[in-house]
Image (cartoon, rainbow, N blue to C red; front, side, top):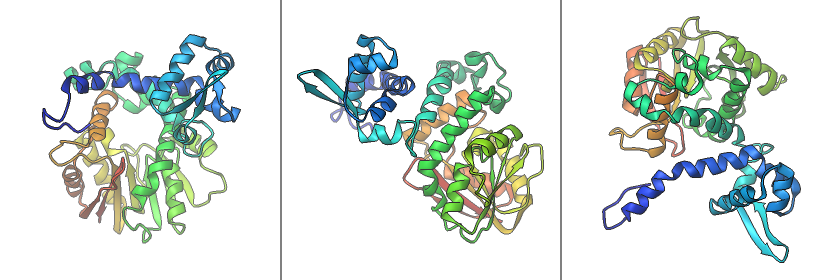
Length: 348
């Protein structure tokens, strides 16, 4: 929300809206988790709160209140009939909140609800200490952020599926920010479940993309996320901080540098520069802060999330450019997409 002059806004109302913002997210998370949107999609017709509660095994009073809150959030619509109130999904819910939709955000919702939300409970501790909160939230060491994120196969699957759902919506925006067609040999460092790699070979059909990630991530990506018949995508197992990086014309680092402090970013980018073919480059996909760090609000909140979950932060375009230059890259270009993620291209 953009803050204006005192005459423009009812400040007590604004503060109340800010303070209750977490209620909004928990209503949406809970409706997803209980399967409300999936049930209404499968039913193919409006249902009463009693019918929804009975099918999902919840209390009738609790479900009625949840459904009414979803109506207020414009995630459901309600029709009053002689038989009572009947609920149905909105188009937004059908497209983004049902598991079966190609653009479903269900998995990232569940990751935020069950993992991120618990870390944010300790935000004040994170601010005091300047480090992530996995130890308090889950009782596990916070020294290795991804060891904590991948603490079980179920958690790793949830994270990978959630990241894939994001790139299913945002991937084409960042990959088309620059013309990447001259690059045929591409390495997606930390490519996870492979959604961005799949978007890349779809947009640039002559390209070949190697997904580089930890062995257990690669195994899951091969088995569950990347079609076996997609021969333009290959895999390379390794830890890019400790193992060698394969030679390529273009390296993609999507939502990767924001996980790490400046020293580790410089270390990784220097390795990338050395492995990069002459005339090649590196594409950074990140949510960019304004140069004075006054916004965007989403990016400021992402940076807070980096505090509670990782070792890194969100940065400005100038800060990323400085990191690229320190590693040896030049001819740095920045493209703001107007969406959640932006693109920075550096050349060797």
